[in-house]
Length: 326
Image 1 (cartoon, rainbow, N blue to C red):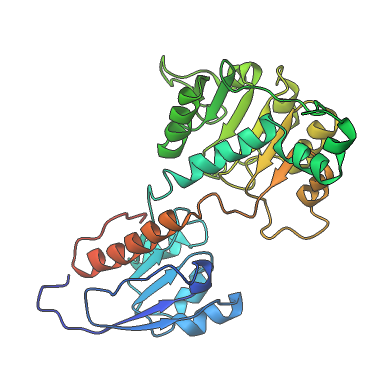
Image 2: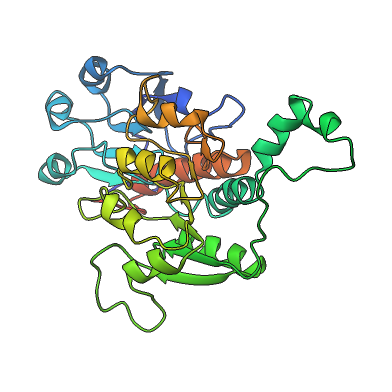
């Protein structure tokens, strides 16, 4: 454990600084350090780059147990994100390596992005914009035209899957729009209490369904063909959480068969998706929106993330680690 008089110089390796915008300031650490920053790191480069590190910082670069075998000095892996599936947690436990992550930094940006997708789809914003670009307004010959559906949010039902900080913030926005809000946890969860609605009932009754759960074995493909089949109200489906929560092939089928009013996704199972990826092929549809995993990426949120990242490392070195995953 470090003391106030500890002057040990820790070697810090940041594997993928490029995952944070240049405008984001990484504040100084509160202890003597030798910081090496790499803009990006390929999988084959990880072991060599962390070999002499005491502390590893990574956002999306995976750190495997094999890579850690050549890095005997590593004591902390500070993940510059909430998800830690890129880290071999079991290998870290065996070695006594602490893994920390970032929490509650996206409480505004993800809910706002979620509702940007909802409003854009519910009011056919992109379809009207495209029509105006093509001259439809002039062709209509009057002050407006009604080619695309516009629906209010007020009075409709919002189904929120996941009741963490982000799910609750989205629910609060929904209530502000006058929506009825239903909460459900993961599919198959029982004993949720009187404030929750069973998963299948949320699917049946919602006009908008938004996902705010982690990607774990019990949530992978939790929305698939069987779930689309029970969505009675042709809802919008929003996923600004994790790729893999929705069976993407089943999503494509549901959209093409008209079982959904639309879908807005900020995530994919493969990022970036190749050009022939199923979600890329859906972009020709006016009721599908795909954004490049940027729901988290407001300037304010990323600066908060960067500040918390440094605070996590400082706390560990001070002997008071926080945001510990293992």
